Image (cartoon, rainbow over all chains, first blue to last red; front, side, top):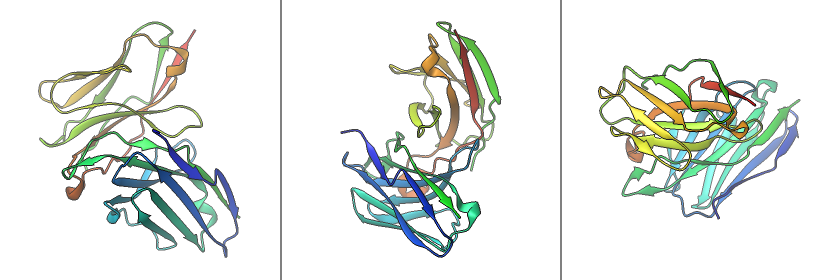
Length: 116
Length: 114
């Protein structure tokens, strides 16, 4: 199984809603990532988890709250978002061996979020 | 974060080789050079990465300049399926020292003509 599965594929939410995006992988990878991608732009790194601990937060607003409950699962909790947060949210994972990232990230297809 | 510079777009003919350049003059000694591509409506896909020596895999070859300030991704025979945005990215690999911090630049949009 070399897949990263993201759910839901599409999400529409209001600015007062609370919702979550989910990402799952069963490749035994110990690093997981959230990226945000606006149309016609490159993916922007948001968060990196390593061994279920947050290792990188790229100054993301607190209305985005990541969670890594176990080594296979990564969530992104969304609360009080703005319309400009509408984007494709990509999850990725990679293998870590003796503290070193193998360099090969496996990406999911993304969750397309629309904030009304 | 060290920066990469790529042409915005390139065109290729089907079944011909494609050389996608990337400049990274501020690369540090521990930075790996990664290439990813993103096909329309899909997440990015790993292509290849290397440190100093040229690298080959089933998808492509990576040629790294001796001074490491530039590199070239080589697709040996372009197919229509290779039409995508190609990203050249620098990153260290030590996860506890910002390793795994892959920052995507603008990339090169490759179109392939039949």
